Image 1 (cartoon, rainbow, N blue to C red):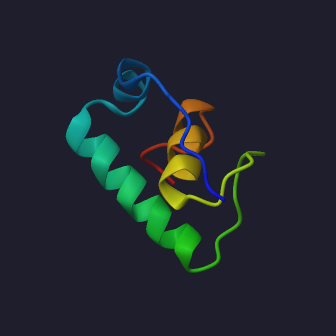
Image 2 (cartoon, rainbow, N blue to C red):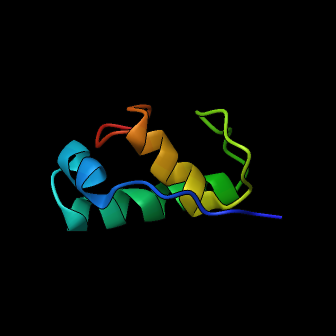
Length: 65
């Protein structure tokens, strides 16, 4: 079962520079995860979007990755 976590939107937007960048980065990372990429965070979720958001929140994922 997959659960969604609450991650404050403002925190994520500051990290990536806006909604467009956040959307693009989450989409690209979720696509990578769906193709078998390893998670960069220890999280109890199989939801690729949740994983990508948590990777951004923890600073493991940014524009250069």
